[in-house]
Image: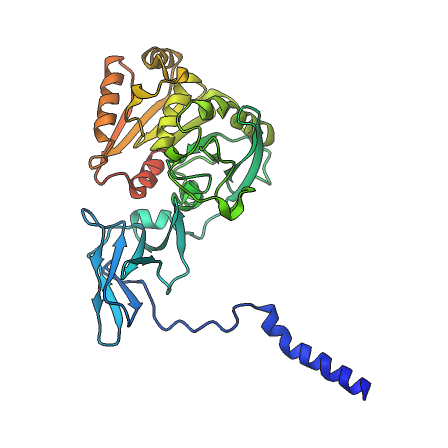
Length: 388
């Protein structure tokens, strides 16, 4: 009898094993497909919310409006169809009776500062570069380095091109800096860096290079969830953090370069170093390149230089003199991009006048739209193709 009970116990455990092996085994089958990208490049979104009184959609393709109303069907299913959209990657969310949610019908999502968004692609010119294609793929690593100046171990994301591990060659390096509210995850997720690099390298439009994406918040070691703060770290705009534009990050940047040039096969000279950044990262790029002329390629993407003279930091002083020395030292490319609807447009215009007064050579790119990722990804693609 004891033997029979033992056999039955084992059998019961065996029957229960699949339940314990997969936590979400009883998930509901998805009955709604959303979003649906149509052949004419319009997109239809569908959300089942039978008890909602109002459902709005917000997407980064919208110009001049934050939300658009969705239409309710008799079955409690809400729908919305866009106009024809240009090729790109887009993010969106819903507002259901005042509560913002992501699309429950898709698993494709990303984080921007402290909000999650659903996402989709429109195939074609740019959208194809932001998606995985059948080409050789590079690797993406999250690495930790120690900063004596910032007194902490800090995390950064590093892209190495396809074939790096098997090769003995040395590579150029691009240091790519994020904006306010971002971290070392921003460019690799919202910026689609790995896919852009894989696809441009495969087409021969960009030389294979290493891309280093550090965390630009001096008082934060790493992205939310990757520090000892764990879930207590709430993402926020960087101007709320200690160390914002106080010069400490720029002063510590040589430690990032030293780590990369010690741990990776790189061409460790000015001719093979590039630095670029968006918004706050553009401010950091401007200051790092002016104070430490170690880069032949400099890219300012919608640089956050408003109130440039208001930061009473020694490192930021005597900029005209530093730019003159940078020009005399020689630089292959100083590239500036800004959207004509960007709130920083006037500040960039004033900075260009400063450069003109110093006869400082630069390349200027003006696009439509404002302070948005759709511009920064395009700026990156153009900048990369000018690095020789």
